[in-house]
Image (tube, rainbow, N blue to C red; front, side, top):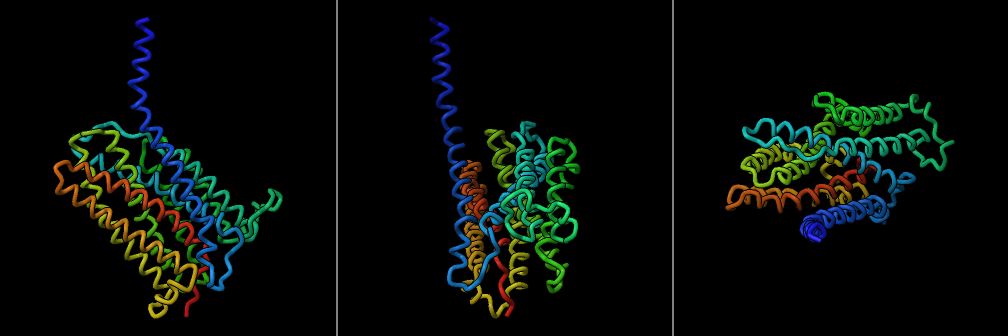
Length: 335
């Protein structure tokens, strides 16, 4: 009888502890489902009234690219924050469970989906018979798609490695492949465009993925004295990353939309409309980051900065999804 009561008491005590985790998991799943609707439903709204024609399956391609970008941000952020914690004296050894293997699996599936589209001449395959794997070796886009597939496969195999370099190089290969894919050879000065995308994507992955892993680490540490120090160290680095993301983003946009056409193309083209939405979201993220920075420096409890930082992570997730949509839409016409 005593054992029964103890067990019941333990269950009652553990119930409230488990409930927040369950609510949080359900909330994450709901947010992920809502995020998936953005690339699936937004293309038709962005293209409405522009007279532009999107590629077949633009919604699915945008969703796959959003998954690929997310799968890149998570492990890059882990490597970045793990390096920051290693530089903190007295930092707890406890670390959150790595999400890198799951991210690599999701990235591999997304890369395989995108490679199947490239193999059919950028058409959505409706059967396995339509996928020409050998044809991927005959085109530049096909080779880059294969690089991304193999890189995510290598990232999954190296996800548990204790050597950061072994985990870093496959992710670097994905970033380089994406930078080259976004700027084909016929484009004016493609190397400059690829360089801008390389810096933009790297800094964005460090910023978004780094904030996510910083918050996970702080939650794992609890009220440790090193928590505010880690958050402050990340905040100082994030300010530099935000500046780099903004500068490269503006420069890349002006290369595709000359200055005298920007205002018109931001509202009259699908690419411009989605770009405008991304700019507004990034501005919101910057305000949330400023709010978190003020709390970190002025509040009695610096860890109250985690509240706006969590909102920042949520908005950054939407930015990543919108970025995936942006890569799938037709590029604006240079006037």
